[in-house]
Length: 245
Image (cartoon, rainbow, N blue to C red; front, side):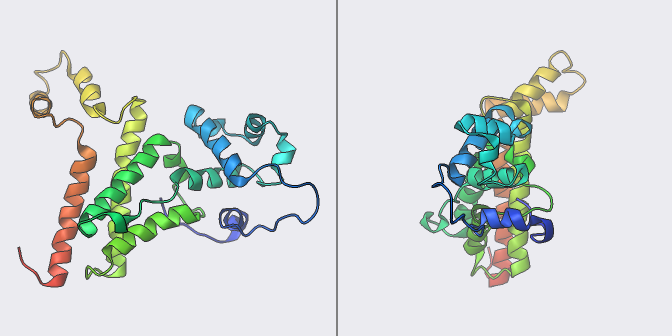
């Protein structure tokens, strides 16, 4: 997720994402919906990556012609934006998570990681200057709401959200790059294989991996990083409130 310019050439995308495109008053009743079209594109992207998504292929998957698809979506740019917002979906409701802002943000980041893990192509489509849809904005709203009342100012709250997103994206990108069937054991297996036969050259790394295996602590970078970020935020929140300890 990245905040970019939401105007200019993005007007058509924004209109599509936010339901502001005028609906045709004449002609046959629509046989498709934006949700159905987006889901068809998501299925293709999940299987073959975002480059495989074309208007032609999505239309064929739905049993329609490419020209008929243009009645609903102007082109691939708009289609990918719609797919992205649909794939991210609505965020977890943090007011249902007990314990205050810290467990709420941990759950928020964990759920975001899960969305990126299931749709790794969204890591590519959620960067740069681009319009964002209501689902993606709702994720940001939930994080900001969790930190409301902590004493942090608006800039700090937004920076916390951006920092958490950056960590989640980094771990998700690493996992996606391994093409593993599971988000677990990616770093351990990849580095362990490289070190085989070269243990004397990298003794500290070998010892660290051996220790991690013995303690069942392999590939905990997501939670470890989240907890360290939240540790720092907690220090800041405590300083703002004037509490000690």
